[in-house]
Image 1 (cartoon, rainbow, N blue to C red):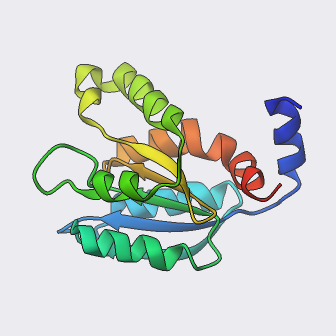
Image 2 (cartoon, rainbow, N blue to C red):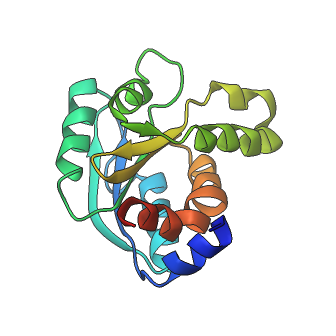
Length: 168
């Protein structure tokens, strides 16, 4: 069975429950443009937000949040922020170290598409994705443009297929 057949079977699942995590030392619910954008795009596509968190870019807080959300009803967890190379950017290190299976294509495709928009600076992104305790986990850069690209071009077009693959 090919990807198109998988998508057809997955389409009958309906709404996919999603958790959103913004990793930032400065964002609040009122200033979290990227977290709000993930919510808007997901809900517009017919999906349900079951959890929303803002955590500092501290490895223990990121891991604790991942652990907590791995036990709730979300089937997909989207982290945004902390994927760059500055000293404070540690989300990638936590998430990539925890993943049980990686979806290397997500980071590769994200950087390829990002390159088309921002040029060589795309190489600074450490966007990643994979599976952790039966959940699909994405980690994207925190800028609104990066979030929009990840959601519209990669995550939402395959969201039901991703969620279905975990339970088939």
